[in-house]
Length: 113
Image 1 (spheres, rainbow, N blue to C red):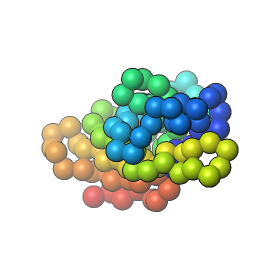
Image 2 (image 1 turned 60 degrees about the horizontal axis):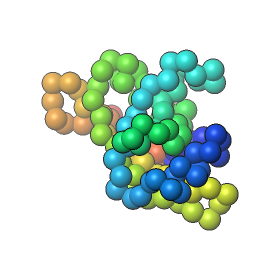
Image 3 (image 1 turned 90 degrees about the vertical axis):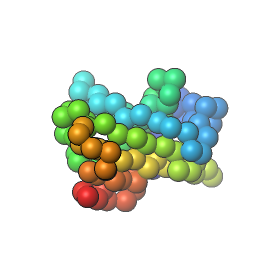
Image 4 (image 1 turned 45 degrees about the vertical axis):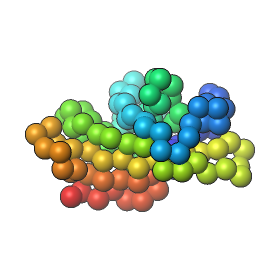
């Protein structure tokens, strides 16, 4: 589940702009004061809907820093709380191949393939 959705109006963004199967993008935030591994989750239009949880960001951030391409999408949206929260699935690839190197689902430990 994407972290930080309860802050800065991100819950409303999810409610208004996010649907299951939407493509999302991961972007490093090297200026984040809370984590040196911060990875933002952004929509196709650039809006930020939260962050990759820290335990996954520690694995993913160095790969993004090395230029590994990725693809990610919204698997589902969890409701019932104060705000809806996106569940994101993603894959990262070495630059020279189409095969994933790391597969991750937010909330499940990443697998290095």
